[in-house]
Image 1 (tube, each protein chain N blue to C red):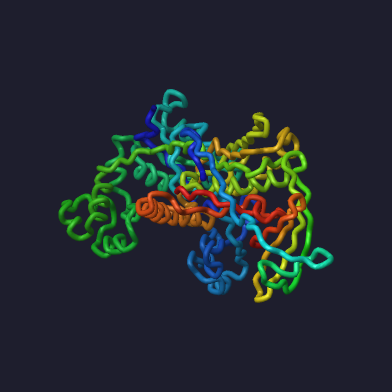
Image 2: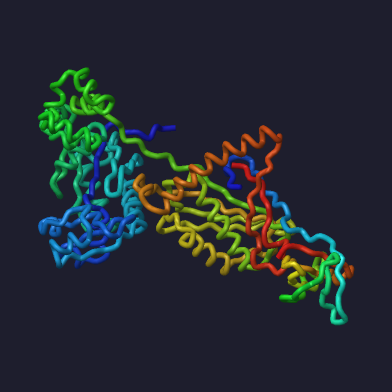
Amino acid sequence: MVAHSRTPLRVDRLRALNTPRPAQVTVDDRGNPVSVDDTGVEEVLETWRIDDEWWREPIVRRYADVVLVGGRHVVLFEDLRTRTWFAQMP
Amino acid sequence: MRSLTSAHAACLWVPLFPLRCEERRHPALAHIPTALLFPTDTKRLWLVSASARRAGVRSGMTVSQAIGLCPALTLREPDPVHYDEAFTRLLLALEAVSPVIEPAELGRAFVGVDGLDRLHGGPERQLDLIARTAGGEVWSCGSRHLRLGWARGKFLAWVAATRARPGAPLVIRDDESTEFLRQQPVAVLPIDGDTHRRLRQLGFETLADVARIPEPAIVSQFGQEGRRAWRLARGLVSEPVTGRKRPEPIVAGFDFPTPVADRAMLAHAIDKLLERALAHPRRTGWRVAGVRVRADLEHGSSWMTAVTLKDPSADPEHIAAPLRTRLDAAPPSGAVEHLEVEFVAFAPGTGELQLFARDAESAARAGRRHALTAAAREIRTRFRQSRLFHVVEVQPWSRIPERRYALIDFEP
């Protein structure tokens, strides 16, 4: 919001969008996802790894951008600290 | 607070202002037949130079008609932003003469002159100062195109300016105004073209002819417009020059979900905040002359930089460029938690801006915002809370998808 400077500032509070939800993911012997919540993975488009914010609460994740059987497009990541999987929109 | 009005006015008029701007940039154009194309229709002529007029070229003609009449005609596409910036510089220069400045349209402005006699002398000396200010370094095409009129009220000052010759300002003192008005053609009345045509068909040639008719007779023929014309012709209307108060500062800011130290990210965030602040309805018709960026840093410290724009602007790129330079030269000493952009000084734009795309967009935005405000109020009434949000870009390049966009309460 654009606020009037001579009135008390109404500081913008951002709400998270596209927050990750826990997902049941099975992987093959190379660690690539083969199914998400009992739906098969048609294609893995891209994978990447994030190591960030080591100075506070570290974020260590392995991402996979996948297309599921039926054409749905989702981004999966494995939290490498807790070994749990999450899914979210691309 | 002192009222920003003035009963007496000096009218400054640069006829064909956009063409004069082009001649200033390309002096060779002053000696050849030239025409500018319409900003919205490049197949038709908008403004035509005197030498092109002598060849029979007229505003509103198609390009092919004009070239047929004058094969040597030079056509130029208009540059409305440049004309507006030139006019803004002219208005800023005039503020050195009087604090009461009212722009009327591109190339025409009123200067409030009440009280200036003690500073600068009588009307002739005031007009001389205005001519030197407008015709000097700021408006370097010189004063040969400048027309100046001085009188009580804006209408009379404008008529005086239209009757003045370049280099010979016309002063109409209060005791001369009635006689001066009587001699003027009805064409000087600010009424619509249809009323002008009907007045001419009825044999009215001068304002004396209009003033001679009883008011009820002219009102029965022409309604409100006729009443206004009759009152102007009799010298009963004297509208003061009204200076515009500058808007209060405009602030746009947001909190980062996680503190950001990356300069590219901060520069992007500043760009986004500038766009939001420029979209504020209070900014319409004003250019930004001063901008400040403030940041709350991790661990409770803060950072601030301020820029005064040499050429006030409403162009986000133009405003952002010096801020980026400052950001590179003296970046915040820590990660930023909250960032804020504040427009602290403004320079006047013109009413004419509404004609052109950028400010036509502002006007459209203001209209949409009004409709959104009404809808948001209705939703809040029904659901007892706002359920409307903006989606805003936070770090659209981020490899962490939940950081790319966020929701923000929509509170118009």
